Image 1: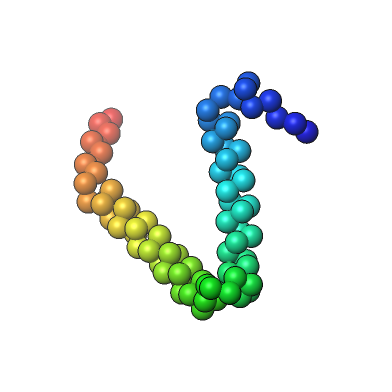
Image 2: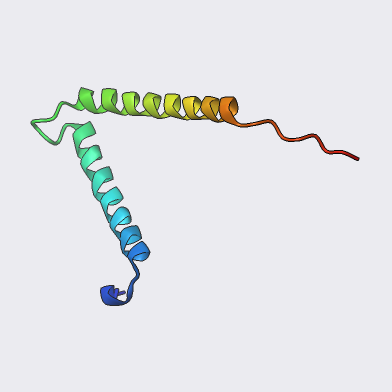
Amino acid sequence: MLINWNRLNAGKKLGYLLMFLSVVGAILYGFWLLGAIPFLDPDAAVKTTAFLIMLFLFVVIGFIGYVAATTTPPKPIKR
């Protein structure tokens, strides 16, 4: 299936680019994790992944706390 790139809008082009980059990133990460790239340490792949997962978790928790602290309470419903 060939894609006519001239007829795609910017959102679809970005979507295809992100899909391509995710596949390339997954392949490179797999090679890094398996030690197939000689100048990259496989242990660093595990440490980097663990760090990024924890960083994401703490950012989400911080965002939830920020939203909870700054959102005004709803007005009571009068019946």
